[in-house]
Length: 505
Image 1 (cartoon, helix red, strand yellow):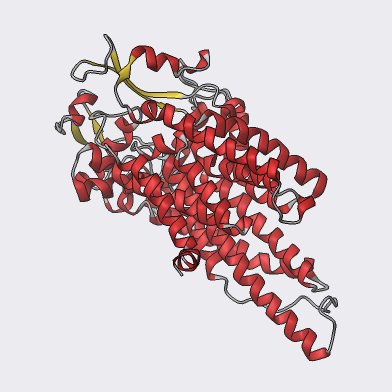
Image 2 (cartoon, one colour):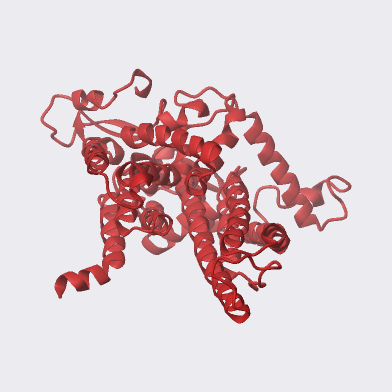
């Protein structure tokens, strides 16, 4: 009886287990370090300014003063910020709820990072039709270093990952519900005409009406682009993929004009995307519109006859501001110790050191103690995930494997667009945006090893052993690296033993 009840509740138990593991790693000791970590100097202070002024004001004075509660450096002059608003608004929400403290800056990111792990688990379960593999995916993203570090710091990329994953999840719900309606319609049609179950049906199939889950996915992707513009690549990849799903589903169900049907129904989805995305994006700039002190807010009024003059002054000013932001991003080539080549991101070749300080007030059993935070993914997840990505792409090209395409599309959307910008000052921690999809790709590969096609869903003893050992070793490696993901004081010698590659130092 108890076993049957547990089995009935297996999905909920899996989701709760993943949430507890992810939440523990993201929320425990969230106040440490009590300092601005890496680019928190921009985003935590900017978020606080939003709570005080309604816009992002410029700062003077030492960065360390803010961490100690001294906000006197905030001025009313608008600050030139180069990313959209949503990430900073979410950080500001935490500050409003819990105060201007490290926990306040970080708590919303930690909670959303925890939710991301649960979403990955549920997405994997839906893709692989297995609660077990869903649990594996959820656990792997929960213990990955990039996902942990970006959830525990007030930076933007973790929020982008959240909305990208949410968008994929909503599209998968849309696919399953739409397919169920198409199957029901096809069965009814065949029954009415007395046709066999595999008979090809004339026409395009039924109109599935307004697809609210797909519209919700478009909103999620728009919010991702409102964190960082690179969110648009996820929108493009997954929304195109959803059209391909429609076409293949209609063909497999048996509608004769499946191709024409899927693409004709993609037109309204495309129109909805073109309308919803800019509406959501502009709406997230509401505070910029309603405050006078925001950077560039009065540009059009101060430069009559310039820009796109037929637009309202506020919109003309916003477009000019975005031109400045674009110029900043494309022209940023300042040397930085931790800038990295995006070609090597999947290998985590040059991770970003977010924080490194000698610790004198905590005994660590050594003469020199340090607290360090490195935005470094679990090496085994990323190295094996890179190999799995190569396998998945081969399966797509050689066997037209749609499941392989689905899991790898997010990796490509988050990684490939950066490759032409290798000359820019960019960092490996940007890869957290596609970390969930790399995990899905790795789990796809482990599943194929444990349940090879030749066994038609059965289990290979050798494959299960390989997959089990792989997951076990990944967990051990995460346990080893957790100190340099969370800033726990350790002996300097031990920190150095974590630097497996010379490029990590």
